[in-house]
Amino acid sequence: MFNDFHQKCIEQCPCCHTVERKAIGEKNGFYIFLCNNCQTLYTQSVEDLNVAENYDDYYHQGNLTVPDFVNVRLNEIAKSFESYRQNNRLLDVGCGAGLLLEASLKNKWQAEGLEVSSSSVDSLRKRGIKVFHGILSEAQFPADHFDVVTAVEMLEHIPNPAEVIVEIHRILRPGGLFWATTPHGRGASARLLGQKWSCVTPPEHLHLFSVKGLQKIIKEADFREVKISTYGVNPFEIFHRWREEDSSPPIVNAEGEIRNESEAKQFDRVGTGYELNAALSGSPMRIMTKNFLNSILNATRLGDSLKVWAVK
Image 1 (cartoon, one colour):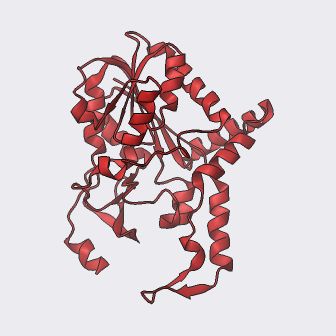
Image 2: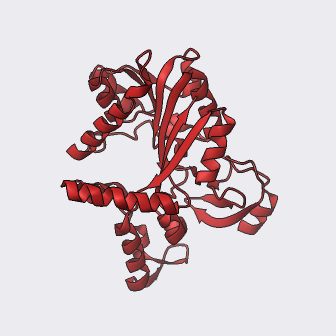
Image 3: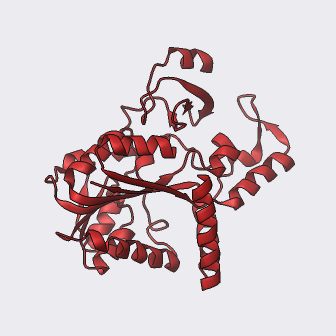
């Protein structure tokens, strides 16, 4: 059945529009493909996916707060936007818990957010933060309006990332900055773990970009300067998955499929990531070590995350 679907499907890569691709497998009822050209991972078409409905209750008390070191880092990120301050307007697309917005407000930005999750929007508005409830095309922001537009771990969730980036370009002023992060579909974890990687979670994550693929859609949106770096890796997950394969006895589920019981246990990627970052942020020497490791991950293009700096 998988091969029949693959042969009939003529969908394009969301980044480079190539139809030639490799079938990777199936997860959560979605077929996963690897683009032969740009190496982006993506699912089959989900054009009818109701993004707002899927994320309506995505945020709750458990994920609206983060460890203190994360807020320190977010303040550093907000400070890094200073050279782009001209009209003092910043927009965070997919603002989630609003932590980057709060850091930006503390740094005197006229910051506002956009979010599809009603639980998040309610929380933000109660804290006095300006936020639009809906998708970017519905907000109808003026052209050339913002100094900075950010999108933290958002692009992988939406069916039409290229269209959203075009709209971000429109609402940025000339010389304004688009800053974004997203999981890397060709990082160490993606290569070693394949579809067992915790970031391969359709329909939550619809695309896991390669550097080449993400760079292409940003440049096609007419950004004149584009820099993409790769950073971070979670060795805990890699060891966890390898240990599962080595030690877990096979069992048979209700459908008669043989699988490991431990595969049903979801790895805590966020929690272990916080623990690792906290450990590497505890002293100047550890921070130097973290920066050195990230420089290697960027040079080899094996970091699990992508960071974008794009200037209009």
